[in-house]
Image 1 (spheres, rainbow over the protein chains, first blue to last red):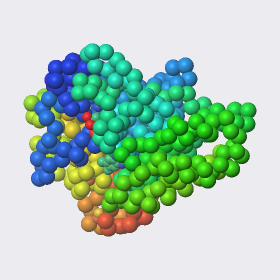
Image 2 (cartoon, helix red, strand yellow):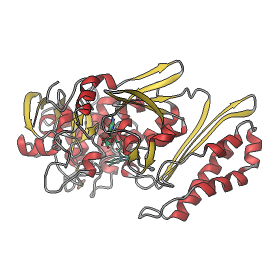
Image 3 (tube, rainbow over the protein chains, first blue to last red):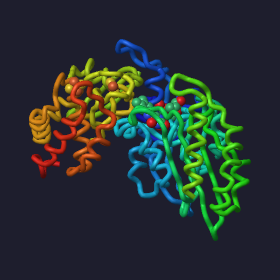
Image 4 (cartoon, rainbow over the protein chains, first blue to last red):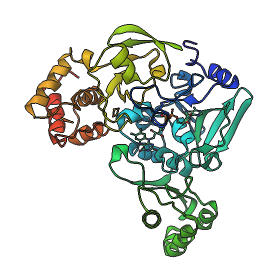
Length: 279
Length: 157
Ligand SMILES: Cc1cc2nc3c(=O)[nH]c(=O)nc-3n(C[C@H](O)[C@H](O)[C@H](O)COP(=O)(O)OP(=O)(O)OC[C@H]3O[C@@H](n4cnc5c(N)ncnc54)[C@H](O)[C@@H]3O)c2cc1C
Ligand code: FES
Ligand code: FES
């Protein structure tokens, strides 16, 4: 270990967290802005912070039995170019910030930041990914659909480190990612949508629709999705009005300076309709 | 208090201080390298771009802790290369410099882009500059300048 807050290994990082260290800092692209102070003063990140971006063993992409495992500290730019990156995640990263931010931002930071408008997180939700959380006490795996509990809030405990993202096999999935925002490099999504389906023998064997920036967390309705499984694409298109109505009941966007609630909901349902027509 | 060892413009250096300091403040205030500019301070304009292990990053969001063991290059060192000269000439010939505030960041972003893709299409240049703002030129001249540097400086990247 070099400087005592910059561990070289996962084990050292977990020991620091177990001893009361934190917060964890990865790329810092969210934290350095949030904790910013003006006039050249150092950002308000406590001395006991643990800097994990340089832990080489947490930066990797590998395939294990069809599913893809991504080390939590892999920069987004590496994922953009990596052959194992699932297509939907790649599409989301292409829409995330500019090249400079992507060179340092990580999936761990994107997921723990728990913004309902986050792009890589939206793709990972849609792909039913889960996260591995490790501490000196042990390891647990949590589905992304359970992980975020509100804007900026997750199930992560103070002594836990997010170490890996696990994405089930996405071979033969048909996917769509759309972000409606302003100028691309710095745009926070006003509304975003990720969809994925799997067709087998003329029927849908999987259907996932995830909505971004339409509520306190990224939204997916497993109840509505279940109604679509087993139908043919033509059947689904025929039920578009019913499906839209069902989603209209669960989408409850907030008003903010970026866009009003009515606009967000309308756009979200239009994106869903585009996706269903494309199946 | 952290002790951070890294390479700055090909010289090994040691930083001792708060690990949370922004790389831009360390470069400008501790090492006196003022060519790296601060615009927005929030990752949106790219004026503060530097190279870390040859990749462009916004130094206003980069905690100095994260450069430990890595190589930082600023415009002061890049200025001594033939690649810089090719970019400088092309920027001047295409009228891509007006007030000049964004220029060091644009040049650093152009170097990162060309070292990955020596013969980029115009769209790739636009994509490569997506994190850099210019209030003056309207970007077309900058894109043309980078395409010209790639052509006139063929073989340098
Ligand atoms: C100009 C700009 C544009 C942006 N554009 C986009 C965009 O288009 N789309 C988008 O989705 N985001 C965008 N972002 C937000 C940000 O870049 C991403 O959310 C990024 O993925 C955060 O990763 P990071 O490594 O920098 O996180 P950090 O800032 O290091 O950390 C963020 C949070 O995660 C926690 N954390 C980090 N790593 C771990 C870990 N391993 N274990 C436990 N906790 C951890 C930190 O404690 C902190 O709470 C933008 C940011 C800026 C400044
Ligand atoms: S000053 Fe760093 S991106 Fe604007
Ligand atoms: S030349 Fe003035 S900001 Fe670009």
